[in-house]
Length: 471
Image 1 (cartoon, rainbow, N blue to C red):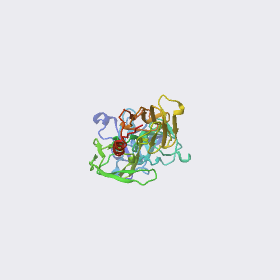
Image 2 (cartoon, rainbow, N blue to C red):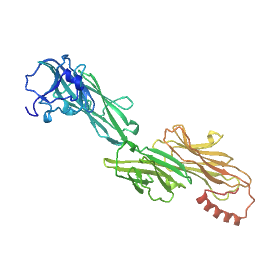
Image 3 (tube, rainbow, N blue to C red):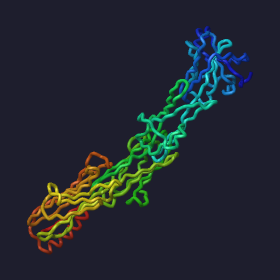
Image 4 (cartoon, helix red, strand yellow):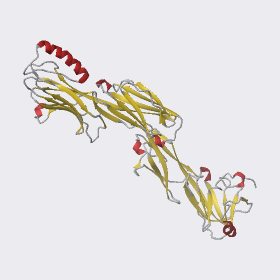
């Protein structure tokens, strides 16, 4: 018989003792009559895993054969000849690294008696890497001459059962959208069978690639730092990736490019530095881009988008930089009894609208004003400490304080200090930015000297956020 004929695995007790099964499969092509079936068993396995084909016969001379109509037998040998072994205690056959073409019927023979084992093979198929805006699609394939009745459930990396977003009539596939980087890990397809092993788990890896999204708060004239973290250590990639940093002022504007650079051999190629911007790639393999922006202007507020292009798609995300500024009006000399208008402004409000509040510290409720807009003003007629705060979900994300003092003659010096922080709306931490209006006594100035002073004050207000007022 040729390579398409049936084969037998001839195992004798003496050869086992003598050579410890040096050759698990002896290509014994046989033309004997088929054995009388003693029992029939169905067993399931998973592609890439191992399975044991049971044998209930106890005679020392036992052989295994396969149905040639199901298995292709190259050169008279079993396809699993180099990945299987005979369990000598019970003559069962262990097959490792299962493949779809291993499906079929196997017979454990002793004389004219034999056990028939039908092997069913399962495998899950899915995309290796998943970008954060893509839908996870996993399908379960069953390799068997007859489709067996099974029950399938899906479990995520937190060992929680998940439900497909598609029709439940197709339980053999899973559709899931909105996955984040925290969803990366081992997922499972659990199969309930009516035959051994009755319960079968098929683990599979879900790797979600994304850039963390942040809202960043900063004060004018400070230095702000932000970073983009990629979980590229999960991705085995070579060659170069193209990356870009873009900016836009408003949500409905178009992005314009600030910088483009490449990631070569898993290392960031240092781009040229742009005025007030600094870039740094962290570690090799590259997984984080750090960006610094010095002397923040109110006009720097907006969305900073980082995009990376892969051979299987592109990834992009934006950090929203929100800038707060305060000012006092008027900025010139004040007559006695005049009032100061304190102005507080955010460059934008996050999607979850919070409260922008001016209030006098240790003052009354009447001495406060709050709005859900991004600008708020309050008029100060008495001495005290005033604070402008942006509050979201009972958390103060950013604030300025201003102190007014009514003396015989006084000036206001507005200084901004503090440190920016990348906070999400649900953040529990706090970042404080102080804008102190200091006072000190000065001699009376002539109108000419005051006019000259006002010219310098206006320049200082633009450059150093300083204004002088006289009562």
